[in-house]
Length: 142
Image (cartoon, rainbow, N blue to C red; front, side, top):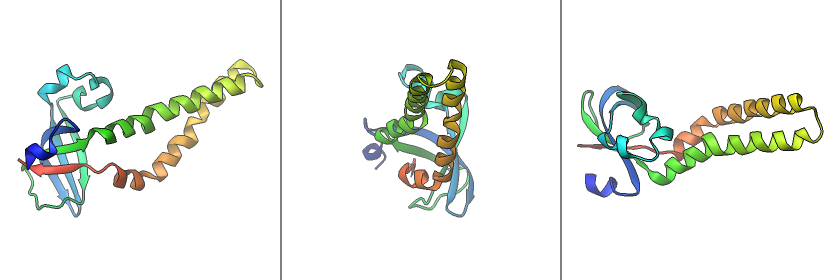
């Protein structure tokens, strides 16, 4: 079953369950040895330190603390996350800068292009539960 879910279309990281509270399971991810050769390690964030903590909700299986598991995320969802976190804000900021620089002074256009990100990230914050349901992370017993 592990090999079926961890194929070329998924990201897989091993970790240990540190906390279980209701539907929420907190997993401490170990540094992956494959991170060194990965071309996306700069944007992933997993390779930045020795351990990372990730929260997985509503698993289908029963787990215990200190159990070794594999955390699996579909690559398509990883690319969607990059789109929402980096690409859309960049396009929004750049478009605001270009359009407003035609009508306003340069420094005002720069400040406006930076402040347009505040409502964007506030909207993302208010829809965080929707994003949690979209970006489903699976865990598998190893």
